[in-house]
Amino acid sequence: MFRTSTFRLTVIFSATFALSTLLLFAFIYWQTTVVETERVNAALVRDADAIANAPPLEILRSVTIRLAADFHRVTYASLFTVNGHPLAGNLDRLPEGVPLDGRAHRTNIVMPESGGSNREVVMVVARRLANGQLLVLGRSIDSLDNLRAVVMRALEEGGTPMVLLSLLAGAILSRRAQRQIKSVHLAAERIMRGNLQERLPVRGNADDFGRLTNSVNHLLDEIERLVEEAKNTTDNIAHDLRTPLTRVRSRLERARETAQTRAELEEMVDRAIVSLDQTLRIITALLRISQLEDGRRRAAFSMVDLKTIVQEIGDLYEPFAEENDVRFSIEAQDITAVLGDPDLLSEAIANIVDNAIKFTPAGGWVRLSVEQNGRIPAITVTDSGPGIPSEEREAVMRRLYRSDKSRHIDGCGLGLSLVDAIIKLHDFRLVIKDGDAGIGCVFQLTCGRSQ
Image (tube, rainbow, N blue to C red):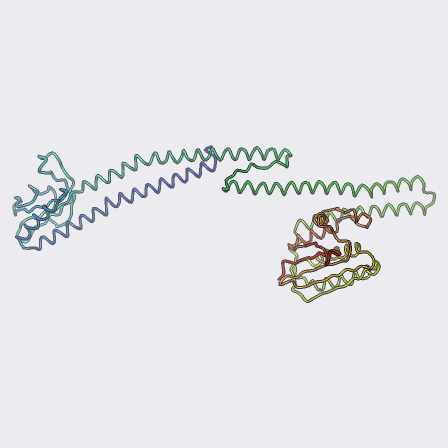
């Protein structure tokens, strides 16, 4: 518990609070010791100067009035002869050790009514008047000393319980944090043992720890999804590679056992090579997707003219469309250049166009267009084919996914996965939707990083 961050933080807060309290008491002590004492001294010196400059009869009257107004018995005022005999006031003798310099000095005065047994701490000003008499003014500062004693006693008696209470609060908070962290550790151990459905316990409060737990749970959800996707991809790879490899093996065995002539042997070997090429295309495509997901090609990005890319793809796929009896048209506007890799963007657009032409029945049409959508360029591929059901639009971007309607068409199910990897590399956005009146399919690539 004593090594927990919560307890250490509580100790820091306790020390800060104790220091703040100490500074507050020090300020109060300074006010009573220095400021208030200086105020008393200044008042005594000022009053002594004012009385000393008055006529003799007025001096005597001022001393009498000063004592009459002292309801709290904290004022001292006396007038003495040249030889130090008292003439008026409440002092029967001159204060011992106080110079006649007109300045305030601290001294102890024996209170007359106590019979000499009680001394009081007094600030005293003593000075000689023009006629040779001695004037003594004083004020008791016992109350200030008492206040200072109270402050020090409060600091001594209140500081220790305050620190102990702070440490106790820190221990309670640390214990609570330990319980939360222990539950997190147990859940993490279960997750590390392979239980990917396990999640960190979430409490009802929305504190920092709760928000962190929610973030970790969202991360675990994404990890579980990626692991499941990787598992499915592995299964699909094993399935898609097993078929051509099995076909290669069967053809080679048949060639060994049944080929009678060199021509028959070469024909069977050529068929086996075609199956091996299909397997290599799948492996190559998977490796390219992994390289793109790594994101290192961003360092080579430059400004790309999408209109030029669209026109080149149109020239490339127009003969392929004619072979499939599909009308292919291009609409290219002058648009803002985007930051990206021209070869990868060409490959992504070409894959979308290739799919559109392959899946569009004879007599249909495919349109490739690029336009300025507000400030952001957008490339759109529209066809009159069978379209993609809404429930499959996310699945078609996964690796090796092939819908039932596409099983008879040549391909390995990695074209759109490659497109998805390229788009994510560029931080662009691809939307799949139905065509006008629900006919065909629309692929709209929004190039969000326009310059």
